[in-house]
Length: 460
Image (cartoon, rainbow, N blue to C red; front, side, top):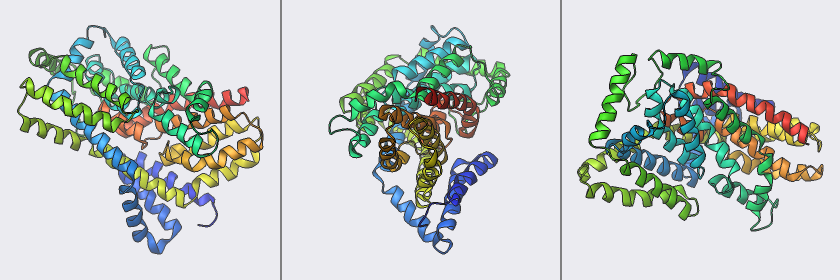
């Protein structure tokens, strides 16, 4: 296509319809990608799909993501198998006296692990799911708490991978001088309204001030009845009745009492956070260093033979394949949307209405739609910042406010889109079905987004 048209909206609509209908995110994304390629050039669909797939698999970001997610799976498998994760759950029970306090613990843990949304989503979910299971809290609620303290928290903390990435984008596009990217980013933090509202909303939900609504209420009722939805291939037993659930969980905690030691959980987790910070907030290097120390640390305690440890790590890596596959399919789909010039079409439609007063709100709305439609909370902004920022300067808009609107939209897309990397990993870490997680948390995300949109209008 030489000019952006409304046809570019068809693939995202196809993906959403098929995802809800089939509840198979990877298949829905692939169908959406093929639909888009048919619009680009029907005669070259096979060649185009092959070329895009190879391009995506050769992308450095995808390689990094595969290694990070797979290694997370390997580390989590070790934590579970050695009883470390169960020992943490046993100790957490001393502080979690009921459903509300267990959710507040999850919220606090999500705030503390602010360095990276991947680190947050996988660590907090895996850490807390046995505790929340004990109090019959749905995995959907757990995944919502985890997801809402992943990207939104990372956005408003300047010491995170998000700040590093977007600070670099601001420098590359001339918005900030060299070496001033993080400083300009920090000026926009007060205006990242969606991120602030999402964190506030999840705190109110955890405290019980905001009740479970819509699909979340149904999920909570099912969990209370002892029939919670579980992710396919979840390590835990399926809870079919209250009695069976309590027996299974007590059995796990007895195992932790006998074999699992709290230090076997805390030491790897603290090392992971420390190494990630040490290596300039690079989670992959942090994971490598952590595994290099954790494996000998467990071996010296004779927790299991080295061969068994390697088998557990491989099984953990394989457990992450559904999440990895979803994100890879999302990258393929985003590339197709870029060929259809979806970002340019949305911005062109809204450009006539972009005055200095309306620009932040419209930028938030447009970017939120794009991030939701493409599942790309980072990549979409590398494409649109060169378009949006010159427009902001031309109408003399408040630059930190516009940056805040962009980052707000990014965190909304990361949280609300069911095939975004953060959402996929939050569901994976929490042991929750991906589509169920997306559907149950969407009402809360939309409420925060609507309030944020109104807030941008009022502030401007």
